[in-house]
Structures are given as C-alpha cells and as structure tokens.
Image (tube, rainbow, N blue to C red; front, top):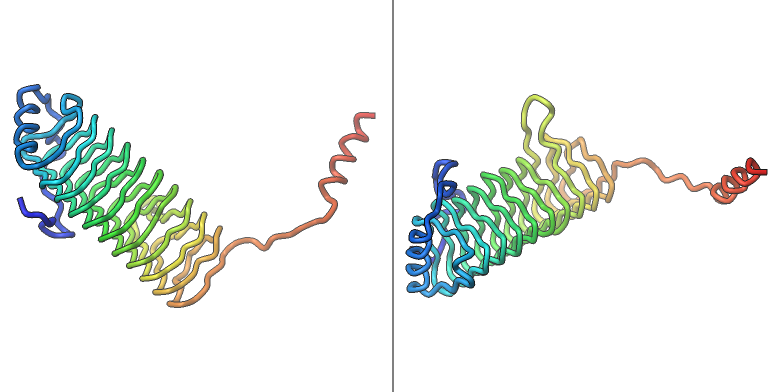
Length: 250
C-alpha cells in the first residue's frame, strides 16, 4: 500500500454491508499474520476484527478490541486505541485514534487526533493535524489543517477552515425539517462555547463568535458577532426570595 491516503477527498468505496458478515477465526488469523509480517503491531489479536481487504502500513499499533472493516487503509506510525471501529476509511501518517471512536467512510489526514468517543459519519474529511475530541459528531464535515473541535460538538454539512477553534457545545443547525444546509466557517475563526450556527450561514476568516450566540446571519471576516440576551442582575433578589419563602412557613 502507499503510505499516504489516495486523496483527502476520496474514502474507499464499499457497500454498507462490507465488514458486517461473520468473521471466521481463520480469516482473522490470516489478516493478523499478513499485517504482522508487514510491520504492524497488533495487541491481543484474538480480540480484534480485521477484514481481508484492510491495509495497514508499518509502524502502526492496533490495540485490543479494535475493528478494522471493509476497505480501510491506514498509513504508517498510527495508533488505534481500544474499542474503536473504523469502516471504509483512509487514515494518513501518524494519525492517533483514541478509545471508543466510530469512523465510517471518511478520510483523516496526517497527524490528526481523533477521540475519545468521536463519531465520524460518512463523508468527513479531517485535515492535517486537526483535533476532534470528546463526544464530537461530524457528518459531511471538512476540517482544515489544524482546526479543532475538542468537546461536545455536532458539525453536520460544515466546511471549517485552517486553524479554526470550535468551542464546546457548538452545533451546526443544518436541517430545517425539509432540507439540509451548509455552514461555512473560514480560517482562524474563534467560535465561543455553546454557539448555534443556523445554516445556511457563513463566518469569514478571523472572525470571533461570542459564547452562547445563535448565529442566523453571515459574519464578515475579522468581525465580532454576539447574539444572545443581555444579562440582567438584580442585587439582593435571591435573599429576598428566601425570606419570602420562610415567612410563608410561619
């Protein structure tokens, strides 16, 4: 196999049923032997499922209870941690897949880091050195080089530029009940936590989105967008409320 993915835009094509049929021990043992001979380290191979058409380059480590399904291609010096399932995907060099990730029909470029508990649904293209962390779900999402979404995020039908940071709790609202729409976020954007981006919408390069915003209109490059209710503080209100409750007990 070649060390590099065939293209960041071309995951392997296979039918959805591939890798889901019964996997006899003999077929698994043959796949393990083939990959071991190629310089792949497989820990506790008896716990893994590796389909016959899977290709893995030398220097990669596969931990126990991993499933590599369909026509998955994995480059050199990757690490696939336990309980991850990778089906019909292309991974580049030095990719790190943490525990409990599910990847389907997607491409992950060199030195990207995924997981734990990340779900890549079909059509994702994760750029070089990008990070996707805890409880992040992506569907038809393109992340540029070095982009990050580290916590509790949904990115559906989204294009995200290089170096952009997506804060915890951010979602792209891509479905209006009838059709799916695209969210486009430029390079070097900072999206604050708990932001909703209501597609179709675009955010220009270098823009900032204030935490807790619901963005429904395009944001120009280098602009600040804040879309949330203004805070109202009533001093002494809580103490008065407690006193009122106590007075009713008398």
